[in-house]
Image (cartoon, rainbow over all chains, first blue to last red):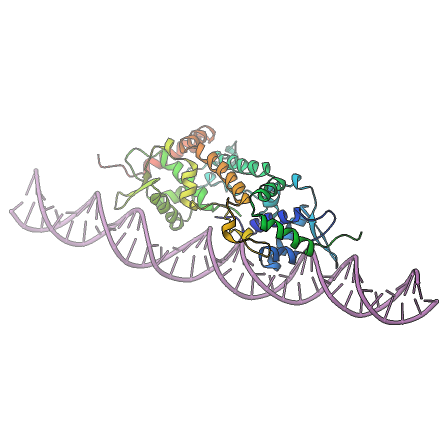
Length: 166
Length: 166
DNA sequence: GTCCCTATACTCGGATAGCAAGTGTCCGAGTATAGGCGG
DNA sequence: CCGCCTATACTCGGACACTTGCTATCCGAGTATAGGGAC
């Protein structure tokens, strides 16, 4: 079992959008070009991010994507949940209520202990993802990334971004 | 994204094996019958548990499965890892090193911050699963399960288990 | 009665199909701009 | 010269094929037992 590759793409794409000038927009095709990703497929997931209210999409000639909230208010969990869905990793099918030793369904009061434990573990995972914001990862990237890459990113962004009508 | 249904089967099956008399064995077919599971498919995953050293498999007429360790020394993570594999949920493909703004690969010193954050979250998930042992869930089940079900389980087990040659 | 041998019945394990979900792609609906035309 | 209108180019969003991995199944390799026969 593994997370969809699109999760990585979505997080990196959001990180790129952080350095977008306020009010500007960046087309999905440019966003895909920045990481050499398949544009059409990335667009599919950018749409998911838009539905989740993480990014805003504006159509038309000057259109594109921009963050819908400040980076400090977007957590990694928000992005993961938008791309993968909020459904839990573990789904209890209540097999304990089946088989030769099963009692009538109404006799099972509390939830299945195994499902509970799995749910707790998922909650810990989710809590850790909620603790990290987009601002955090961008700050870390800005410190660790090669200076030349930061420079080129700024230049590329200036050329690719669609500035608002001033 | 969701975990394989076999994870639930494996945990419940191990929980059943806890109440097996010491030295006895329970065939995979019986184990499947207890939860009305597809026997052939469950066998596939029981083999995984055996490879991981969680259960022992003995072949032959009196053969079957038994736990390889005391229930208190088997964690939920052990079972999940055995069934799903130890590969991380999130796999970083280093897309930051690609595209127009990328620097030469050797310029990227530390690991990708996003991958690090995802890995931390997974570690929290794993830690929570390692905190819960098979003994824990069985104790909880024994308390919460309907008494009639516990009774029937004991009877069924007495009939299905293959006792060691005394 | 005791021992040995053989046939049997039962076990697990890996190799083989079917299906759902993730992956990848395309085209249509909609909008802000750019240019041409009229006043 | 200025304003309006139209055609254009560009955007996103949802509908359509393809590949990977989970789901399900079967048959073969191997072993402890049970029974029969010989001593």
